[in-house]
Image 1 (cartoon, rainbow, N blue to C red):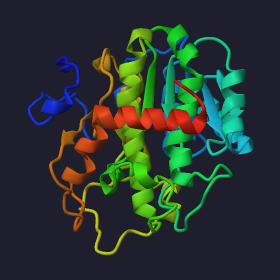
Image 2 (image 1 turned 60 degrees about the vertical axis):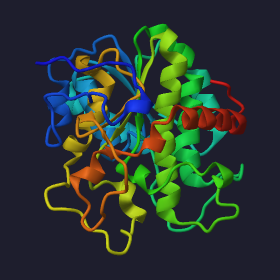
Image 3 (image 1 turned 90 degrees about the vertical axis):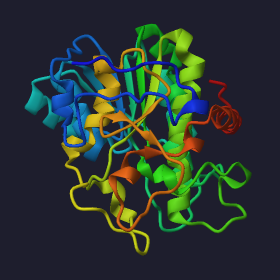
Length: 333
């Protein structure tokens, strides 16, 4: 097995820097990625673990010995999933805790209640392409609030626990949908521009990558590695609001099973192949290829699915987002 390149990210030379590859592919499953890894004695949080990719990620990490906390809005659903995982894996170290990422008080309560070290945080939960503009009580656009700000506050609140673990990892779940929009700092919450579901979703997913870039720079001295990932095209409840934009089709062979979709986030969470790697964006179990233009969407191809926009890796944009997120949440990070 070849060792990945782990040279520091240089956004000025993305087009020529060697990209990290692994023996795994778009068709690899999370179970295959986790094979041979032992998480006995390690503590993990998976947000949005009551369905889809979150459930699969929690199951796989439990199967290799982790103590897994399912951070969910619906604790009854979470308890049912935890029981099923225990039955299938034999691991009884499953916990369920309530977490509503759209509610800052819920996030604060969750982080305040956490005790002891945290080895892996998988920021998996999210909402996608809400058909109508929705806002939180704070006035934040809901997709940005849930997908980015809630997870920002969660990770910042858990930073002492991550630092205490020594060599902790944070996985920020993004999407190829980040290509639909950068973070529009002049109007993040659609106070002036017309709301469009995919623009809102796109900027929230760009924010998830920029968070990884920003946290990697700030938390390196704590031994915390932070990477962003894209799962690919997976049929889960996340897409229940989704009406594909006119003219957009998906190329045959690109759709994944839930097990394949969870593979890249499990890779970032536990694989020794990514030891020492931080501030990167992965898709199809490899570092994403920088793009110089928006790929065609008719049909959507692998170039779209495993590419990354330069604005999503820009350190200046990451710093600006960090400052804005800190201002909105009141957390310095």
